Amino acid sequence: MKFISTRGQAPAISFGDVLLAGPAPDAGLYVPETWPALDWSRLAAAPRHDYATLASMVLGHFCGDPDWKERIDRITRDVYARFSDPAAAPLRALGPHRWLLELFHGPTLAFKDFALQVLGPLMNEALVARNRRALVLAATSGDTGAAAVNALANRSNIDLIILHPRGRISDVQRRQMTTTDAANIRNIAVEGTFDDAQAMVKQAFADRDFAARHGLAAINSINWVRIAVQAAYYVSTCLALGGRDVAFTVPTGNFGDAFAGYVARRMGAPVRRIIVATNSNDIVARAINTGVYARGTVEATISPAMDIQVASNFERLLFEALDRDAGRTAALMQAFERSGTITLDPPVRQAITSVFSADRVSEAETAATIREVHARTGLLVDPHTAVGLAANRIAGASDDVVTLSTAHPAKFPDAVAAATGVRPGLPDRLRWIETATERCDVLPASIAALKAYITENPRR
Image (tube, rainbow, N blue to C red; front, side):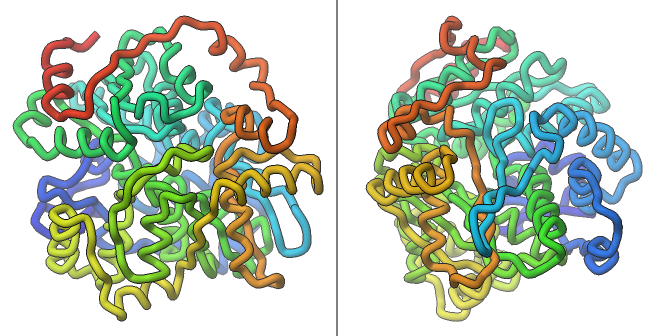
């Protein structure tokens, strides 16, 4: 299996290379050269597989190498055995034709654990085999950072610098990052938005000499392996529901989780439709509903992991909607980078809307959904999950719809308590972060400041 850039001007690379890669040298994102296919009819007829087996199977389709498949199988079995629910990604019925897919049973209580707990050890093993060391550089709107810190702490051949927007994530999200005592982890609070932090990371990778000199690697959802691993819980859900056609509602910021559903569909899983649910930072919803992909001003909301106005993974979907025309993809993305807006041709938008629908959910609707779900079911849901549940209003009443519950409510206790009067507490195993000492540096939203920080602070 080889991987190619969405912009067509970079050489194809192997699974081992894409595992360690950030953006392609031409600024595009890597995608598989061809789409592998699951034997869905055989899979659906077989006895129920455990989650680790399915995850290994899905990711294994993208590597094509027996040695990598052995590593993937070993690591996935170890990772998902440590989740707090034996199913890893359990389904909870909410009513007729409605389910909640709980993706918060990993060590940091968010869906990011599914991919990063696998990616971390895989990356480290690849680096050890090549006698290399990498500096992983990433921006987070909250959950990726905590999951990355947990997954990469004390890895022998990896250092991590994680950027988050100062004052724009929850206290729990911040403390999950900043209370680590691992010597290979550094946290930076950026004086700006997530989009500012993400732009700094992209600019660092775009300087090829700088990236090579410091051994930069990526674990954001620009990393293809992140997307492929997350596709597994779409496959497991379709199997758990008897192989029927299923629609998924996905709370979306950077679009990686939603694109993982598209990957599962391309591999043969019966993912009938993907409903993209955004908060007021609705660049993806506007692109799907109007055909105009236009950067807006980032608004701070009670669902901060979705406070994003440049959705990196949208480029991968655009590439597919353009029938993999790399030249047109590059031209459109370069135009967006210059002007902050592009308009999709009707055939391109039609290709997208054949799979995707979208809805924008307000702050008041998010809070009302948290309150209503608690009153009706006794469940507490975090605000990102609530955005997804609210967006189900655009699905048909008889459609089978699974909403991705992307985080534990205790990660956003203020928002949940304001809506319900009930303050969710952290699991016992995480309460230590509430009083632990934090360690974090502050930088302006400047690529020059970030480069100077990396250069002047040797790896620990």
